[in-house]
Length: 171
Image 1 (spheres, helix red, strand yellow):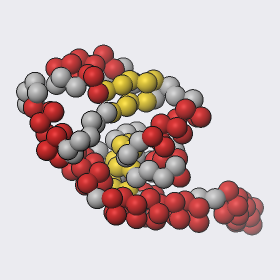
Image 2: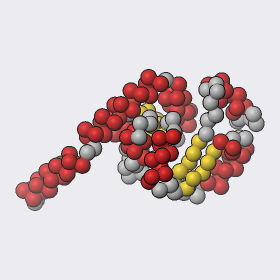
Image 3: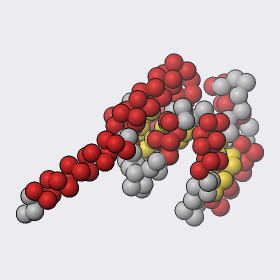
Image 4: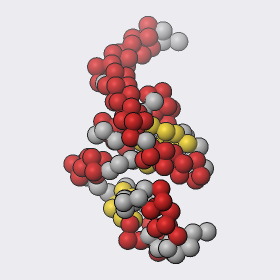
């Protein structure tokens, strides 16, 4: 359990001169009240913002203004947030079980962790924030992968091939 004031000491030791601020965007799935109370209990409510839905232009600006994007969701069918973040030049920490965890691993564009493993999640965030060179390389690899593998021309060509195969082999 973290005691009042202890969080500041931990932050100052790990990231001297930085004030860590966490912004939580998107639907809260009913957890916001509990999270607000938790932030108060941990004495970090001055550094946590619950933004709710953020429209695309503002969302992209949040990515640009961030140091790292954390995506611990496990129940997303795909999840564009980490892809958008990488294209905005930001590294990502993603739950392996999320809809895009496998892509992030294949791309080498971030760090994945097992959903629910809070210690590994925290370690991944610290690792990304502590190593500028690794962070820059992850973003470079992730962007190259996205532009090469997830562009609309490639996707359309693959879909055409799926339809052609289905038409040629109706049984």
